Structures are given as C-alpha cells and as structure tokens.
Length: 438
Image (cartoon, helix red, strand yellow):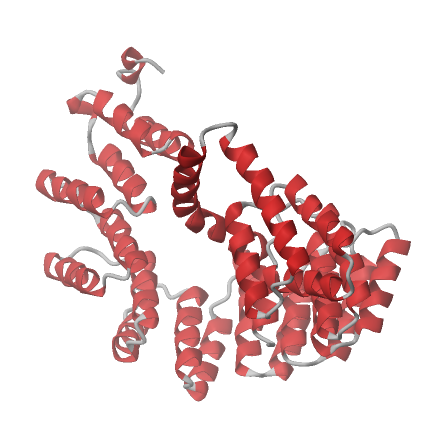
C-alpha cells in the first residue's frame, strides 16, 4: 500500500492495518506505516492500535511513551489502561502496575471485566491474597460488575498455590455456577484441571459427566480428563476413558494415547506400553514422535537398553522436530560405548546431523551430560571431534583457522539462548511430565 492510499483509510481501518503490519512484518514496518499517516487521521483508534503493538511486543519504553501521548490528547480510555496493565503484569513490574491501578481509580476510569481479571492475575502471581480477596469481594458486591468463571479460576489457582484448599473448594463452586453455555466446554476442562490439583477425583468424574454430555466431540476433552486421571493415579479410569475415546473418535490424535504410554513408562509398565502401541499400529494409527521418544526414556528407566537404542533411532527418523532429549541420548550412547558398538553410535549421530540437531550448542550439552555421567571414552571423543569438524566446515566453510575459531566462538555465544528455547518448545510437554515424576 503506497502513501497516497493511506489517505483513503478510515481511522478504524487504518488501526486494523497497523496491527496486521506489526504481526506480519514487525514493529519497524508498523512504525513506518504509522508515521506515513496524516496527523489529522491519528485519532484514538490509531494510537490505541500502536499501543497494543508495543504492549504485545513487550516494548515497555515505547508503550509508555505512546500512553503518555494518549493521556495528553485525551485518548486514554479503559482499553489503553488495560494494555498497560497487561504489559506491567507480563514484565513483573508490580510497582508500576499498582500505580496505574491507583491512577485509574483517582481518574474514575471504568474497570471492565478484563481490567478486573488482569488485576486478579497480577495479585495471584505475586501471592498477594489480601488484595486479591479485597478485589473479588468488591466485584461480587457491585451489581454492575459481571463476574465470569475465569475470575474465579484465577482465585482458585491462587488458593491452590498457597495451600488454602478450603477456600479453593468454595471458589470452585462459584466458578461452576457462573459457567454459560457459550464457553461451557472450555470452562469444564479448566474446572477438571483445577479439581485434579485439589485431588478431588470424585469431582473430576462429576464434571466429566457434564462435559461429555455436551453436544460436540473434541479430542481435547479426552486429553484433559485422561491427563487428570493419570495425575490422580487412576490408571484404570484412564484406560476406560481411552477405550471410550477409541469408540467415538473420528480423527485420530496421537496426543491422547500418548498420555497413557507416558504413564506406563513412568511406572515401568513397558509391556502395557508396547501392547497399546501395537494395537494403535494395527489399527492404522501411527503414534506421534513424542510417543516414540517417551518409549526411549521408558526403556532407559527400566534398563532395557537394546530396546531403547532401537526406539531412539525410530524416534529420530520419525520426528518432525530436532531431537533434544540429551540425558536419554547420552544414556544410549553410553550403553553403545560400553558394548564397543562405536559404529552404531556414529550412525545415531549421523541421523542427528542429517536433521540439523547435532549443532555445536547441542554437542556441548551432550558432552557435558556425558561427562556428568563419567563416560568420557576414547571412542566417543573421536566421534565428538569428527562431528565438530564436520559441522565447523558446514557452518564456516574453508577459511583460515584463526578466523574460524573466532567466528565459532561468536556464533556459539549468540546461538546458545535460541537453541535452548527451541529445545524447550519442541519437547516441553514431554519433559514436563518426566520431570514431575523424577
């Protein structure tokens, strides 16, 4: 869109355009678009959109500068205050958050449902039960304030974190009474999760019966209830739920059976895990990569290392993401080393290289893990050096050694955080379940 076309946009349309540009092309392009607009068209919608862009990107200084301009022009309204409250909440700046709340109260800025919920979330995050309860009581006493189930969910979460179980139970009853038809499915799933944390298996089943009687069928419902029953150590109930899901499912979702496979692996029931996977494969339903990775971990845990190595190769080959489970990988390589099978270890490292996993950062993490486990064998040292050499050539090319070393160090310093974040994103759910049981 050229600058002449900007003059034809209504303020509301330009605000939407600004937000889309920020999402697709980034803040810099959004700022260019904003600056290209004529001053007379930069009204509340435009500034509000720019503020939201900065707030979503956690650009604190720029967001505060825009907010000050909006106050100066008389554009500051509930929505703009909400955007800043959310930003301060995300940044963990409780002082600025409280100052802004006080400013809203002093100026008589209306607090809508979102304002109250973000305040409840902030108090919950800070474990400030006094302010949270004070606000909740104020909301309940005000006939003009509409309290949704989400508000009570925030309060219940706070009580559960602080061990106030009786208060959590009372709030969950209020939660249930505020559920409306439009959000019933999602609300019941949240309620099941909260009752699970409370350890109330009876309530989990009660809410589940309400949820499953809803009209539509969703895999996410079974993911919620099976996950909850597993956490409550009700494997018999989880197995019945899986059978029920298999009888009704229209679109196979590997995340559902994965929950039981993971539970079996955690408890060392590898025979049950193998049986479930065999039935899935026979039915033409291929388990997802996380399931294979979980089996690797389960075999390592139960010291069935030959099966672990076989499953490791399958997991690497079938995964659409990079393999980042360093502890399990190191266990498998240690097993191969102790059995003198360096060729197979090289094959596994080759598979990792083909999928772009065996980077310098990943190698460093793997070597550190192996050293922690006191492996440090000659064979692996040779493989390590070979892998590093191959990757160095791939990344840096045929350049002088001093420049190569310098650039490698700079690259490693810059890539460390990104690589770690990518690993957490790819295997976050799987590793979380493992860590909670280790």
